[in-house]
Image 1 (tube, one colour):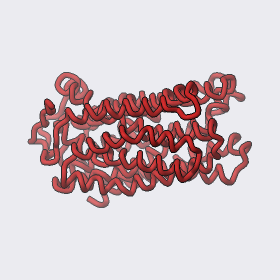
Image 2: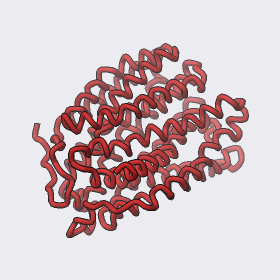
Image 3: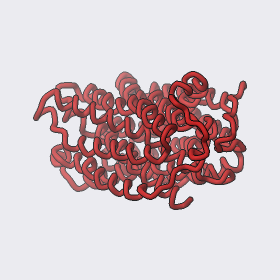
Length: 427
């Protein structure tokens, strides 16, 4: 289990590194380089628009790779998705800017970002299910949390490279070639991830299935559509919260508050490190007290904290901003630390790879794709403190709280082929 969980962690870390490094670049440099004819705010919005395309592609990736996972096994998904995401990320680092090839530059950026999202949409489902379906029932939350540590590690790697380059290069050097280095590094990381995954065994739960779904998406839409919508809505707050902290606040503080990008990257990275370290703790608590109570608690904490977080961000003081980010990400990890065990337990085995991945990535569209764009537009129309952003995030938290309230508890539900899907709660 330890070797399997570490291989899943390494793979998700690599893929989320690829995904996050784009978000950081979008916040810092992509606007002026690929949309130079726009105003600064419009350029940032356009860069965040290409960022959002990755989230739109993720549900499509979950459908494509979920079909493969439910028909042919979880293991092939891990290899194919890692190859696709790694290759498209390296290619982003090679795209000429608008000054060199004109409008073809943002078009290429858009296509590659779409391919990034397509690969990541398949990654999460394969990595989480392979771990959850191998894990013993009484420790499923703990072992399934390893892939959930991957995003934090990937974020720290992505922003660590950006922080090192930002601190050692001049603004001109960073804008000229420095921002490309983290994208090129993705090739080395992808090769390492593929090596780690080359010896993984197929999920025993998949091998137990006597009959596989012929068209998993059709079964999910026909029989589990309500569950997909509820899980997508429930997870929206996590995505909104994470990308408000890691992407929108980075652009807002550097452009509007005059905080240096080095300081902002350090504040955000420190909060994400704590978040990653607390992920196993949330998972262990879910093994003891249940998945749903922790999700409800994290969601409620997020709703309460959004206005204080925006107030602390608006001070521009590093310690206060770090405090705002830290509490927000603790609320986040209280929910997302248990999701890797929760979602597989909600869906029946024959459509689990498709259903869990589509629900997870639908939350990304609702919360992650729109948040940097909406927050940037709302902040531009706000006064000194962007209270409209706080209201927007609070609204998403309340929506997700309602969705979590309608989902059942699953801690005592197994993930074996013989066990039925739990019925959604009615209250």
